[in-house]
Image (cartoon, rainbow over all chains, first blue to last red; front, side, top):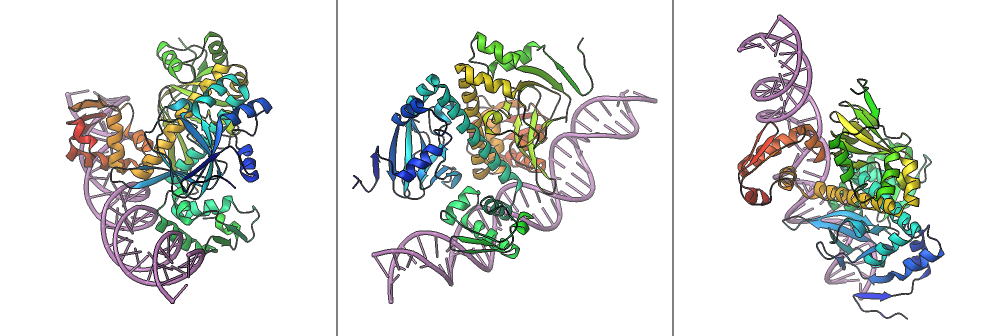
Length: 234
Length: 234
DNA sequence: CGTGGACTTGACCAAGGTCAAGAACTGTGG
DNA sequence: CCACAGTTCTTGACCTTGGTCAAGTCCACG
């Protein structure tokens, strides 16, 4: 059906789900017909299997990306080779777009954390478009703004909250808002969640078991909360 | 000479130093004559003494700011009232500009950390300008991009490096690049440096005393480094 | 049924937050 | 010039948090 290698598959066809995700990104959602067409022509679709490098720190930044399906880990290494996740990108997230005007080299490594489909935008093409089309410039601003806010929240979270608090936070953000019982399903491995929250996998496990006494039950990827209101008190 | 109260002084006059700082911000540095005039007319100058609130978390965001002289602390509170600094803004830094398109309420508290002069930009006015003038939109993009990169670096730093490493990093960033001895002077209290690095003041002290065995001497605000190259190995 | 990967648990340890006491520095008025 | 008060900074003691390593469990899948 599609041409594939075991490493990568690049084509221009989008399936419906991926297309819907792409159209909802702050990057494209507000664009008029003409701008949208021009953006789409600066874009290509890339599919990668799990644990493939998308780019490496220090490489020339000639594209930025939007996750359509799957997950991407952005991380850096310290001197001893220990990895630390900076950000986990979910479907709809854009990454490396800050290099449109912020520098010419990638600042961190990017790697798939599942089988993943990406929209790849040519950096120079979008730079040019942003200068010509007002609504594209505005879309870039919106995307950067949102991204900056979540990154600052991440700093605040790291400096202000303990592991169980961060996990409770994460759960509450995707619970129905009422105070009663709730059940959610993690969309990815716990490994990734640990990275998102800036924790080692073991610390995440321990945080879950701390939360057990507040009525949180974890089985596989399913998290059940007895009382959402009680969890909010943590 | 100038009209002042003990709290605040708002006027349209800029002294030369403040004007020079303002013109070098990514926000204004690339603007052409007309755009520059329009931006300046959306701006006013505000002077505050030490420890005055600029805005509070949750307030309506009707302006963003650029530090001209002095320092500003952005911070959040946790449930028990403990403060954590998210960012320390130095002369030339812009803050809350992510709310141009990222939301309508301030997400954190902002407070002066010294006697401080600020450029205050009316949010709605700049929003309108960014839609009309291409170079203003571009300036916004540049500012947001740079800001996002430093914030991501901050996350990486927090997650990857120990206290002495972060302090060494800070020192090295403002040392002449050669390998020999060097001496720098902190532009502010150690309290603020601790906040920038995400440390308690005591942890900063201890980091300095750890670095003593790598040839770093601290007396008051003066930091002397015996061998810059050796410090780089940390 | 067996293998490998994901997850959990325990033991240990290092980093850094907190609290309290003391030292060093700054500015004040005598 | 000195005494004093108020900060800021440093140091020590203690303790919590969470990273690391190793072992063991659980689970999916061939």
